[in-house]
Structure formats: structure tokens, C-alpha cells
Length: 213
Image 1 (cartoon, rainbow, N blue to C red):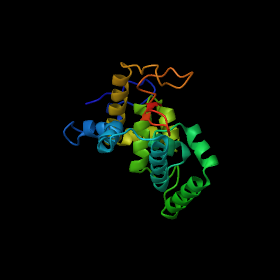
Image 2: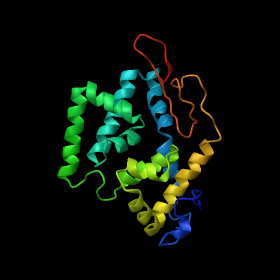
Image 3: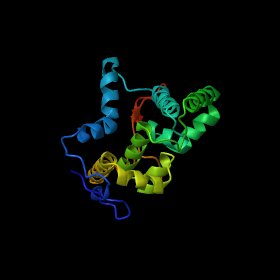
């Protein structure tokens, strides 16, 4: 069972319900599913014999943003879901009117079905919180990415052993990743992050050999 290591966060033993047995549900598989997307994408592209183009990668991330938005997440949560910087997502919205219109439609679909940022806790909300913690966010940052007030998330943490288990597992993954630093090659200028907080993907520019991004 994972234990909470953050001094400012409730521990698993503080939860209203005691932590679930490790065999109750496969938390390790959940963490792997959330973090191994890159491996799956590479396997699916292998038969094509080439790395994805920048357009392919951008379209895949935009599709993720639409999926997240349709489930009631705001811009910050959708950026976490799609694994793109929030500022880059805002630039896409400003530059691509077709994409912006699709995001508005996805948001309308969500609100029409009672899903709005900061509303009821949903699996999408939990996913964003978990991903944020895996990537190095603080408790407060993870809460706000999901559209929640940190105090509300603390109450949910204390009331749900399942949530406590997931979030502790996410911190465990983060701590393991901190031991491995990302190479400087391909890292955006001025960023010094570790594998826990920075991601980069191999993409192919039009007419140029594949390079790290």
C-alpha cells in the first residue's frame, strides 16, 4: 500500500474509510495505463515504418482535448489530459478556428449533459488529478487543474480510500521518475525539468528527418 509523503496533504490513514487492500483493484495497472501512452502510440505506428509528423502529433493532442472537454473539463484540465502545455493549447485555440469551434461544441455537449468545470467529481476529474501528481504538480495545483478548490479535494481525500490510494500511487510514480533526468537533447531552451515533470516526443517535420520535440 502506498503512503502519503506530502506534509500538507492528508495521509491514507486519515481517510474516513481505511485504505483498500492492495488486491482490491490493480492500482499498478491504472498507473501504467496512464503513463505508458507513448509506448502504445509507437507500437501502433510501427507498421507504418515512420515517426509521426508534427501534424499527426498535433491532431492526436487536439482530439484528446476534445475528449477531455466533452467530459466537462476546462482548458487547464484538458491540457493535462492531452499532455500539452496550457499556453500551447491556448495558441492552438487562437490560431485554429476550426479547432476552437470544435472545443466550443464539446463544451456545449458537456454542459448540456450537466458536466461543467468544477462541478461533480467524475472519473475525468480523478484522471486529471492523478496525471497532475504524476507529472510533479503539488496537491493544490492538481486540484485547480481539475477545476476543484483544494479544500474540496482534501475533503474528498478523507472520505474516499480509493482516491487516497490513487493519489498516493501517483506520487510514488513521480518519486520513481525523479531518479531519472531527461536528457538535454531536444529539451526546450530554458527548461531543466526531469522525467517526472517534462515530456518530449519524437516527431517528424515536413521534409525534415525526425527529431526530438
